[in-house]
Image 1: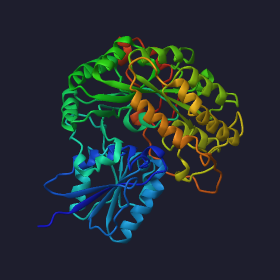
Image 2: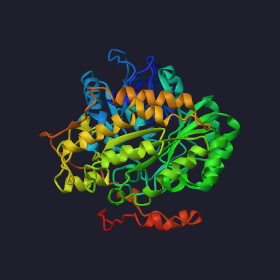
Image 3: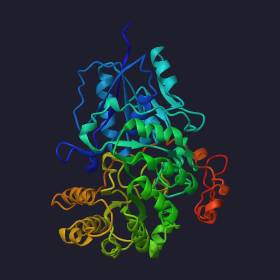
Image 4: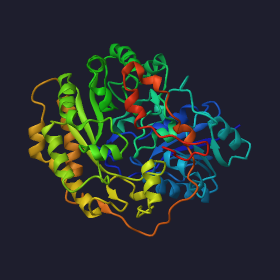
Length: 486
């Protein structure tokens, strides 16, 4: 009996980090969701193949019985086009990922079925329903996945030679913080859920890699657990990068363990150098006056710092761009990314701006963090666009790169040069101008309610680190109907 074939598809995006820029390679492989569900697809029951449209075209003539598409907001429109083309051929389509999870009824206009939230608890049912000829509608797990016994990613489906950073591991889901611009707590819960450390280590050993991305919202998460994880990683003698928050990155014992485990770069969400803007972002635990000392401390352990900043908060004025670029250069940041506040569906920013009638476009292809999609209050939309571009041009100018080059210490100079050359090439060229978008696209309806995932975190979780007050000060509460009460 012939086995059915499933085609996993990652639609093409406009993100420069996923385009094959150098020697046919993309900087990162954006395949985490698809590799997770391919891993739980029974190999003895299904044939399968995977296409990342960022590095190769989709072969619509190749036979498949089911297409699984994962999409984020910025490239969901392309995902819909792919789904429509396959369905016109009579092929069944299931969609998932962040955007379809928050707008499943929109996705159902293009797909036969939509997986809302985490796929692990419901994927077997999706496949069983397909085999029975009744797959359709919305599939949503009754609770969050416990992160136990996760299957190992099917890297054999991936053209791994087409990516610079190709291997990644996820060790935690969920986030206790209430950052207004982020959908992680609404989607994956307001508490961390951890994978067993032995399972993580075994997965890393299977990868047999020398360069790993830890694909967690916060690689340090709960510090006691992070220390245990990094102690287990140290004997593997590999290099890794990950993200964390300024709240815990200054802890000496974590940085020492990170160095010993092979960490060469940490991404930090500074977001803003303005305290007013940080309060607006629901990230008041960041302390701008301590940023520079924090960077120096991390550097002292031979670890690069990739600073993340965001422009366009109502508290921002036109001085924020020059001041931020100057700070990033003076603080000797190794790399920096500057984004424009983007009201992604599922975020508190989206709900607030939509309620205020300030969103100017629902063309999802423009939700790329390079476009102004709402009516600002502190300055014009054009000022945000121009200031954002100025910050990139200043930080990645040859003058700035020469000044910031790590002439001493143990930072990875080769990776430093690769990253800075990459960003200079992409973010200072003449056609890099950003956009101000205002059109007549209609707002979506029936956004999925994830308020039960966004329940209050148990503050005792943080007591050992002495940060309960910081978290509770930024916590939202919901009533039984899912309405925010604080």
